[in-house]
Picture 1 (cartoon, rainbow, N blue to C red):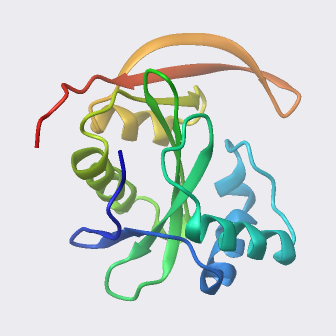
Picture 2 (picture 1 turned 30 degrees about the horizontal axis):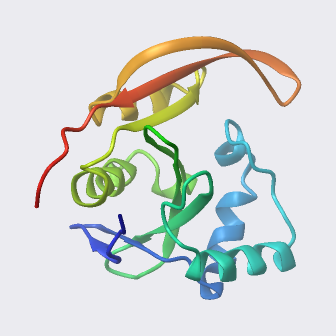
Length: 174
């Protein structure tokens, strides 16, 4: 299965990341509020440049490997976030980050809806979120993912609870 990029929405576009995204990528990935519930840490420009270069050509949906897609403003092309994808044997796991300046405007919903409707509709989709990340939990529910489990976890040396969400998809013949 492949994802045909870019995916165009009214206000956002899902596309490959590129080295030209370095400044925007580093800005939101270095924001402590954006990183609060994320598994990644801010990195050097050299590391980020290499990561962006790798993601520009990385195979998408390779079983067991995470890949990132850029979320860009449709009008300007400016990077405002990214979506991570990891194909497992029975589902595609998603994760996402959005610049603080882009939050609260429905842009993450639009981007994820594009991905679910156009690229992942033949797959069961799952997401795992820290139970304290209320905005993420609301977004997952709004997208139609159902809470299927809660487990204790350790995150950055702190005990927490993680919620697992899932969206069943009927296999469509297109």
